[in-house]
Image (cartoon, rainbow, N blue to C red):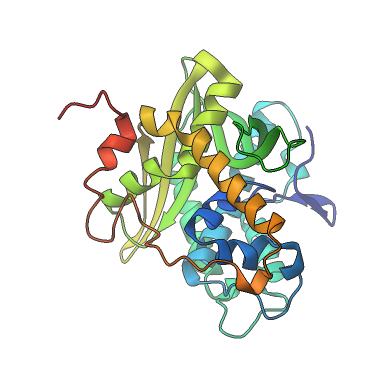
Length: 307
């Protein structure tokens, strides 16, 4: 077993956070260059004035990701004939994570401790729910993958001919037919169909498919949205296939290239990090609050699309 995460005492605690240079890096600058500067500009790192308050959904999601990560990583160890106790049991992992995350909490931020019991009950219920009809084999858990992409002639710096993008994939499972399924865990307060469309069209899921096709080729069977819903009557669970959007996927590389070019432009021009372009756009360009973009199908399937 190759250790993952950090050693806390005599066992490992998984890292279920963002990857080192993932889709969030590109998505942020496409949303607003100023937002990118706040979170990624070298001069902003460590500035006490710049911090993002943790919200309840973010805290609850973090706890669940840690719990599910440890549940599946220990199951993988058992399947591979290794020692599952190299990793904390899910409940203990969530408790340790909660304490560590709540250290140095800033005013107004949500506390993990306030959502810990609810998250523990949900993860335990999840394990019971999927115990008898889950995919039979765990291939990877909270594994970070990296791919190198060409610049496509969009780089300002002639020596830069490629960019690196990474992704931490929550779960990779193998079916009875040996096909590979890439799964992303999502928590929600309630189940909504429009969330399926939004996730399926997101850059995160396009990148998951890029990695799936690159790493597993013909064995790759697609991506799944793995829901854990905190409902008024208790948690519920569902898995929804994130269907392929071929034209959107084909154009995804150009999207990454444009994002990286924007970052390079701003850095090369020497903008003060407090004075980056402030672009106010609706973050839900494809999926609005009450409806989807009327042209979303064109981005999904391209010129051949016929109504």
